[in-house]
Image (tube, rainbow, N blue to C red; front, side):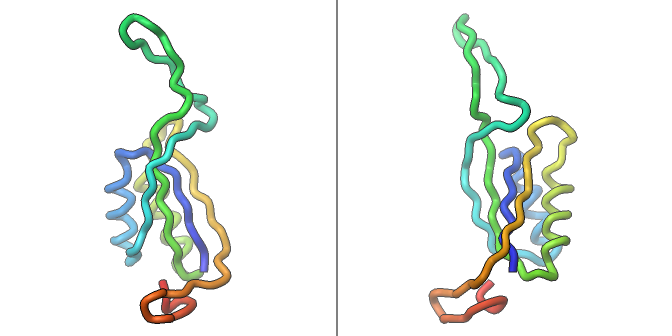
Length: 112
């Protein structure tokens, strides 16, 4: 099992969710996040004063999938979230040792 964590632009969330459903995945966790990468934020003008916006709004999407679904999930996220512009985000993949469904006690792939 692997945990996939993707940081994407907020307006791409619906497209990412639909793309994951199309490849047969469900059960995601979404968290609002703020951050910056290479773009290092930008400057804005507000009431005549210029200020730097360091942390840009992002959305973190997390899901745990079986090993055979990792490549499909990554490709679905990548194509749905891509705009071709700076700040599209990142995808991280982590190994998961164990998963347990609290309600039933199921473990491993059955729990996800």
